[in-house]
Every structure is written in structure tokens, then in C-alpha cells.
Length: 432
Image (cartoon, rainbow, N blue to C red; front, side, top):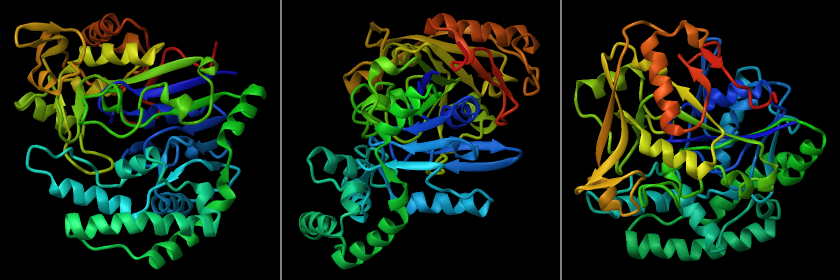
């Protein structure tokens, strides 16, 4: 029995979905513990592409139990769409395969409307680059104790009381501050009561399910969304998401004690990407950046936006090792670096003449950070068919060694392509 947390070490989009899918083969229970449908996990299985925004990636296995924890903010419409798409592909989703915490907060139509209204009202240069899914406003209501949980949704009168109270205030803001359309109580109530009927069989106490699984010596896999530098507390604030993306979020976002976590794996691309606004010290604006973007097919799974691309940022990687207590590193998209003669890894920042070995907390310092690079020889060979480290070119092996040296933790998994079979499992966290 083992419990393993998988998180992103960068700004998200590191390939967590594929790695979770791989490790799910060794797990019994897969738990999503934070974020919402602003995250997207893309999987390629037998040539077919799947994109999940809420359902844990492990759902593609028929014999696994997937759970959505209380740290997630849930858009019922999106969840039901994902379930319908899976059923259209021959996978019936029942409560035996998917459970949702009764404490999970619901994204409401006014959350999405507020997201769009606020972003539109911001001046140029001040925009956060939100996905507009209502994630931030939902977490905001949760924190100020105005949120609506699934447990509330299943009590029609309690749900209506909360909805009316919230919309009285939200509609005032839409009308008087933003000059946008207001939202009708009856329309939302009717729509969400339909959601309640469909979701009721899946709602339960996920913390108890996890505890029972542990006591039954089952393997549990916790699946994070986004990446460490998007953490609300430890990321490049304010250009962050609205939840704790680091490994500690698995405890608060699902209901398991920290002493029960056995292993934490950090997913790291062989280079760095970012979607939306915010500091990005190693960002490339030349033909190399364009080549990485093209070879890596770097478009957001959720937004479709072109990702910003740059060299591997070792400072960001070291931050992730420290903040998450990483036991192992997972390197994805190593194949994208093929064809680049000279590679660079950032080992420190120069901020107005001062050296930083961590991401500055001051956002202006973070934006002014200039990378200090270590040069490494590249390789020309196609490595997408490699099945072991020994089959990689010596330069690719040297690159991986450099990543290990900078991170200070061993590499557990290496991915050289999008398919399940294009993965080298060097150290399985579920096999002690």
C-alpha cells in the first residue's frame, strides 16, 4: 500500500495527465484535490485523444475508483459533459467509478459572469489572463463563507436560500458597477435542481473513502492541477490560480493527514512554458522558441491559447523541490528538444545586479529577473522510440543528469512522446 501525490513543478501544462494515467495502472483510487475546469489534462490512448478538465485521468481504467475532493471547485455542466463524452466512447460512469465530495464547492453562473466582467474592466497590462471559467470568484465566495457546496445543492430549500442571497448582491454589482446583464434566480434554480438529481448518486464523504482505502492496503494516487508557480501562496502572485497547487494541497483538498503521504512526484517538462500573463524569466522570443512551440504542440488544453515557451528554468524547479518536498522527478517532452544543437538551463536569476536562487516575491523583481544559463550540448537523433535510458543519445543523458543535479532528487520517469508506451518507468512509487 502506498499513497503518491503528483504535482506540476512549473506553470502547469507539464504533462501530468499522461503520468497520472500511467501510474493509475498501479493504483486503486485516484483523487483530484484542487482547481477546477481551468485545468486540462490531455491523454493519448491507442491513438485516441482525451481531454479532462474535472474527472481524474484514471477514469480511462474500468477497475479504478476516481474521486473529486473538497478542494476542487466544480462546474456541474462541465462535469456532466465529460461524463457524457466518456459514455459516447463506451465508458459508462457509475458511482462505483466516480465519487464527489459533499464539501466540493459549486461554480455558479454568476461566478463565470463575474470572472468575465472583472477581467474586461481591467486596464491593459493589468489583466491576469483568467480562463473566465469562474474559478477565482468561486474560491472567493468559499473563503468569505458565501459558497454553495454539493451538500447544499442536495437540500432544495437551503440551496434556494443561499442562491437568492448571493444573487441579490451579485446582481447589484453586475447592474451598478459593471453595467452587465443580471442573472435570473428562477432560471438558475431550475437548472441546478436538474444537476442535483444527476449528481446525487455520486456525492459522498471522500475523506472516509480515502481512509477506508488506506486501511484496506490499497494504492492511492493524488492528482494535482496547474503547477507550483501558480500556487496562490507560493507562485508568481497575482499571476496565479486561486488554489494551493503544491503537494500540501492534497491533504486539505481531500481530507488525508500529511503523515499518510508516502511519495511526492514532480512533473517537469524538459523546457518551460506558461499560458497567459505573468513573469517568465527564460521565455524565448526567437526561432528557437518558435521551434519548441511547434514541436511541442504547445496550445492550452483548456483555452486553446498558444503557450509561451522558454528554456528549462532550474530556479523554478528548485522552488518546486523545496515547496513540495519532492521525492522524485518526472521529465516529460524530452523528445521536443531533439534537433536543438545548443541547450540552456537557467541556474539563477540576476535582478538588477543581485543574484536570486529562488523566484522573487516582489512581482516587479520577478518581471525584471534575467536568467543565468548553463550550456549543454544538444542532439539530432529522434528519441521517440527509445524504451530505456541507455537507448538515448549521450547528450540527452547528460541533459537528464544536469536536471537531476539542479533538482537534487532522482528522476523516476522519462517521457519521450505522447503515447502511453513512450514512457520509461525508472522507479515506480507504488513498488517499494
